[in-house]
Length: 132
Image (cartoon, rainbow, N blue to C red):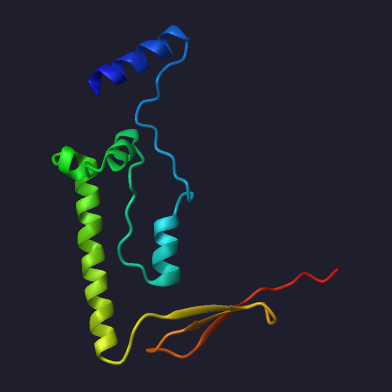
């Protein structure tokens, strides 16, 4: 892998391009984690690194966290997995007590997004149309 990275760096220099160094791309824009938390009550959200070697490991069938257990990226995936287990446990507990996950439906006739939550009253978000 180091040899492949060196070849890519050499090729980039030869073409006059400088290789990018740890560029962060926020595909959902700044503040998305806060918005998820405020809008949907999502307690845990993670910035997951998009690395070529993660995709390569997935394609080869060897999980990235197995082949690179001490990497910072593997730590993020372990934290994410732990949070998923905790959230599933909360859902199971709520369901056992007569609750459960909210159900979200879109009524295209009314242009309304309805949220049915067993713990709360029905919420709805309507699409306001501009008058012409």
